[in-house]
Amino acid sequence: MKHIPLIFFLFFFFSSGGALRPAVDSCSAFDDLPYDQNRKIISTTEKQPSLNGTVSDENFFDHEIDLLDEWEEEPISVADPLAPWNRLMFHFNDKFYFWILKPVSKGYKALTPQIVRTGVRNFFFNITAPIRLVNCVVQGKGEAAAGEFARFVVNSTIGVLGFGNPAKTYPEFNPDEEDLGQSFGAYGIGNGFYIVWPFLGPSTLRDSVGLIGDSFLNPVNYVSPTEASLGITGFKTVNNTSMKIGEYESFKETAFEPYEALRNAYIQNRKKMVEE
Image (cartoon, rainbow, N blue to C red; front, side):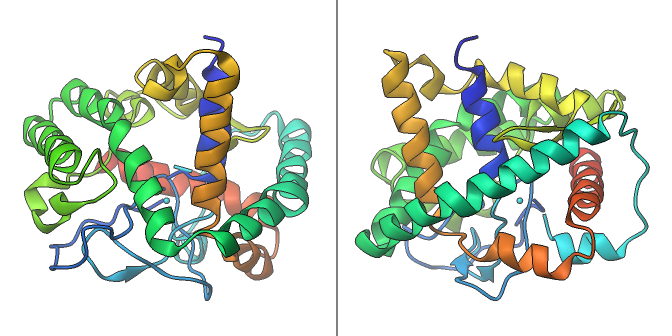
């Protein structure tokens, strides 16, 4: 339980938007993975190859949302009784990004080749396969579970511990990513109320409980001592953010009211993910 805050930290900065799931083309084994499944942002900044080898825009936030497209849709109602707290945390996370995370990530990016950063990102995506696999099973998605397991085996062996991504050439090995929040939703559990966590960012009561459950399946949380686990998490955060610099800025420039736009886009995207 002492490592649960690590999941909160990761989720805000890399979560994951709309899934990238078209048929795949042949491309480099080090092509970027759709790590940020929870959210994706349209950006005019650095583009990363998606799982299928085409160019895609990935969100600054951990773990995937097309905010500009989602924002144009009619907002989905969600209770926001903690609005004062949520707005405070939104501004806290915003300052943390601009004052600390972005400068550090820009320096790291300047010193680290793209192929290395992509390989590191692939590695961390690969070791979190247990989260996706277990939730495929929980939802009764047998084919997706088999595909997730196959992707882990192929990338861990041929892909050299997951630094490469040879499994991308097989569509059946690239199922939609699943998490416990989606599993709860699949069984009819609603969002509950909206909440913004420090370092984590947008979530709901349902998804927050899901994050706690998923944390027990994340191998990084079992690294000892705690300082080492925190260091690994920090390194992952900086590496992933270095590949998304500019996307959050684009979102803020486009959104009339960033807090509400992010809340609506998050809720809309999670609804779509549950329905997939």
